[in-house]
Image (cartoon, rainbow over all chains, first blue to last red; front, side, top):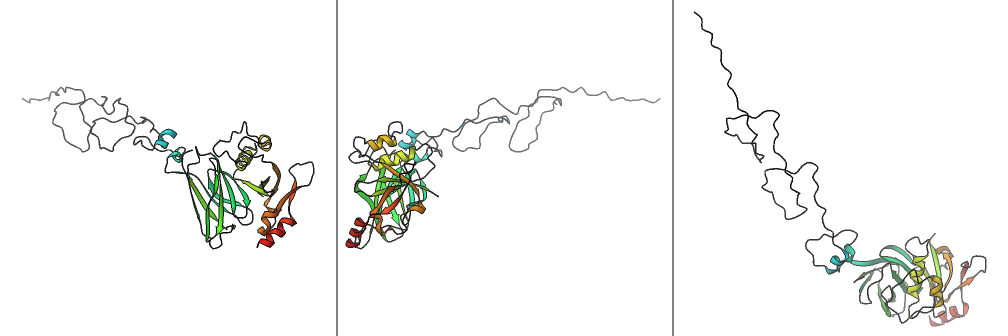
Length: 196
Length: 116
């Protein structure tokens, strides 16, 4: 007599998934199973940090694909002028307010027509006389106590005229190295530092 | 060509203004005239609502009257700057009040020759 043995399927108990996201593959030891339509924990609802010290992190869940970091805080004009914050960031529109930044600069020529070859923060220049140029700043300094610097590659002396350094403009004089007479210069540069 | 603006100086000569940017509203021109007009006032700020070219020409406290004489281009300037101190502006009295030309004042030019 033949005996047919029919295996009785084992009843599988489905449990809640307990997968863990990690940084390497690892075998688990549970003997339970999960259904293919289970929901897998991958994300959390924590607002991501805006910025901070670099770190690898230890969280076992990740932010969602469409998460948004808070905008970094750009320094205001007052913060730039104070120059002390280590948390606010400099933006292109405000960086010139930092004390170390040039508020205006100019590279110009005096021979022929007074011509502006390159500049920043300059409204205009005036050919005042031989060897004399008046420079007007787009934004005036907060006082006359600002620092001009000059340079040229034409073997001349260049500096501000006595009593002609105003908050909104400055008159510059160029003289010959030897005789001290006012003299036009081919090209010269100037930069201005201070509070505006 | 770059537009240049002619204004007067206390010594009777002229200053020639070059502006960096386009200035359809005339604010940069007024600002540069305002700065050139300073005498005892070295700190006040230009205010476009108050300091118009007309107000600057009339005179502001701490500033001398600074008059916009004319307008030209770099092609209108004398090629030789030897007599820069003798350059003067002469209006051609056309319908455009800023139209005119730069001439060399012979008396001043002679003084320049004598001093050199």
